[in-house]
Image 1 (tube, rainbow, N blue to C red):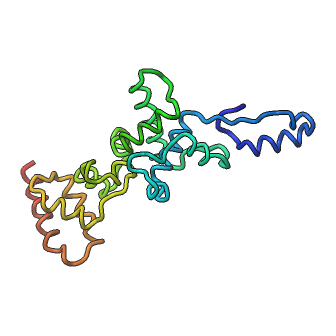
Image 2 (image 1 turned 90 degrees about the horizontal axis):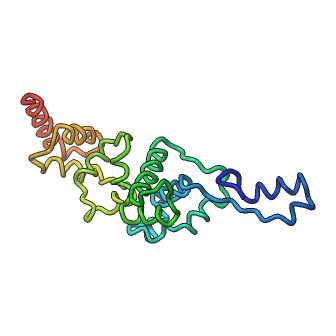
Image 3 (image 1 turned 120 degrees about the vertical axis):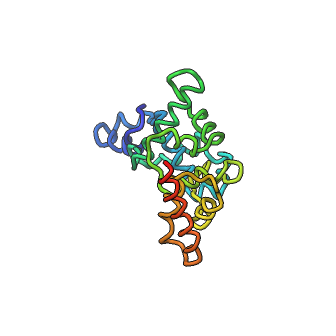
Length: 206
C-alpha cells in the first residue's frame, strides 16, 4: 500500500519483474492524499463534460469518481499555480470547518458541491484576469452558478454592459472593462468613451 505515486498497474508490473512468484500473492492498493483528492475534485469541477452531467450542485463529484479519474495517472500533481493555490484553499477550508488537520474524501467533495470554487479562489493570492474580476463582482452566486462552481466567466459583452450600467463602478472595474474593448464590436465605441471619461474623472477626484 502506498500514497499517490505510481499507478497500481505500474507497481504490479515492477513487482512481477523483480519477484515474479512473490508478486502474484500480493494485494496492491494506492491511496490518495487529501491534496490529490482535492486536486481531483477541482479538475472534475472545471471539466466541461463533468459540468454537463450535473456539476452545479456538486452531485457528480464524489470519492469514487475521483478514484476513477486518477486510476491510470501516475503521480498526480497540480499543473499550474492556480491549481496549487486552489488545492491549498480547499484543504485549509475543510480543516477549519472540522477543526482538525485532516480532510476526508467526502468532506472535500461536499465543500466543492456546496461552496463552489469561486469563494475559494478569492482566498488565494492568484491574480484574476479582467473578465474574472468583473464576473466575480457582477455575477451573484444565485444567478451565475457556472462561475461559482466552475469558474466560467461572463461573456465580454455582458461584463462590459454590467460595468457601463453601474454608476458606482470602481476605477478597478472600469479599467478591467476597458481591457475588453478590443474584443468587442464597434457598437460599444460610445460606451467605451463614456467609461474612459468616468475613469479619468474618478482618478482626478482620488
